[in-house]
Length: 120
Image 1 (cartoon, rainbow, N blue to C red):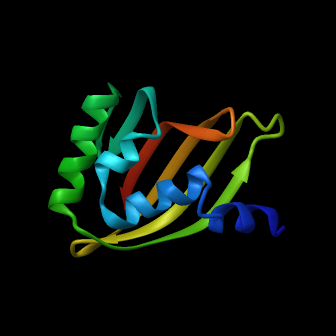
Image 2 (cartoon, helix red, strand yellow):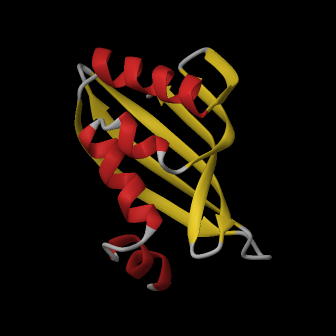
């Protein structure tokens, strides 16, 4: 039960860096973890983008909704240990969002394949 928490707080882990980028509203840093194609859903707008397109969509979202806090509430790894997910709560602007990330394992780091921001 402690393993996901320990992985999350490890400053060298990809998940920790991804979480920090979301907390800071740093689309540039977050984009370093994007796979070559990323499914991005911001509210009702959903599409598959290349890295630069996904970065632009996320940057626009962060510009309009400046993050105040991000709290990871659930994290897990697939049975085959080839993918991981993270669910968290983001307070940004005047709203709260549920954030879903689906990542595939790439060596000792993760590549984001899906990123969703749903208003709570």
